Image 1: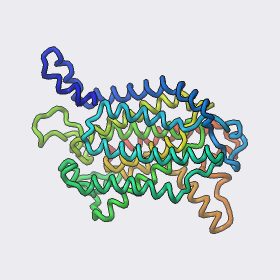
Image 2 (image 1 turned 90 degrees about the vertical axis):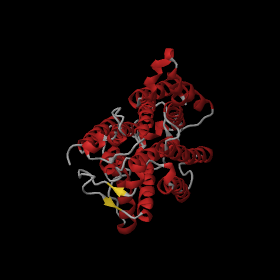
Image 3 (image 1 turned 120 degrees about the horizontal axis):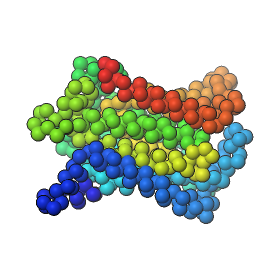
Image 4 (image 1 turned 90 degrees about the horizontal axis):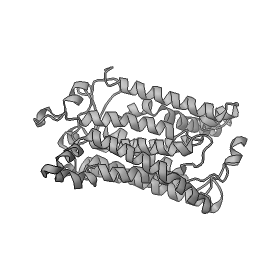
Length: 381
């Protein structure tokens, strides 16, 4: 909105400084700061409103005993995160960009599903919420509709994206030399599963104070760098030479993808502002309204930057958390035995006696390491 309103005014001599608005790095910084300020300064008011309305956390009956004291802590703080992400995105992004509105639409849609889940948990005073099959159905429908449009309506996407839209990049392998090209009817379901899986993996990780938002920040920061490099132009006028950065690094070169880095900056800023109140001991929890939405947004970033497979490494914490639940359920149903003391895996370490802050910080450290490994793939090919 600010971009669309202010940039045309640069034509007036005394407003020539507004030319800076055209540059993606400036808008990334602006969106990050805007999101952080919104999240940081509005969260205290939001927490008080949640307390007044008695919107408190419902603790699992089979959960660790140390979690009993968390019952009643304000939840649904993810709604504040979404506001802090969506407002800067609307202010600083080119809203006609398919990558921006597609990712934002999934974020909002998954946020609505998460809101309904949180609302039913609070209303019924139990941890059940929306039945899993209905949540999954809603997630598949939303991601499927948006991705089908992005992959099938040629007039709405950049030409270079259209050419590589069904290409699959292999981690640590040169994209131009060894792309895996899938049929469209195979790739779209694969992309949808990627988004849904990431959303639910983040949701499963959100079980300790600040445990999920830390890796979300590191993942979003990594996608910020990746999407900016994929769409970087370096101000070169010759259209044929605009994407030299991506070509030099041998990553998918996609015009306009740099706008997605502004969304990622907003996620980083909103996450940092929220973490101030969500860090141990948490004053507020994000709830499903936050975890499902942020996970869906990260999944869309993985698809649009062509990092579907690399996202397994980058989101390794989310991946392990999800696999631990799958392994626990499968083992118990097939063999009658549990692999872990409790799933997701962060509860396993709690049962082993690890203090909650130790688990959180160690998972953050691992997430930072995985982000660095992911970024190293820009050159290690």
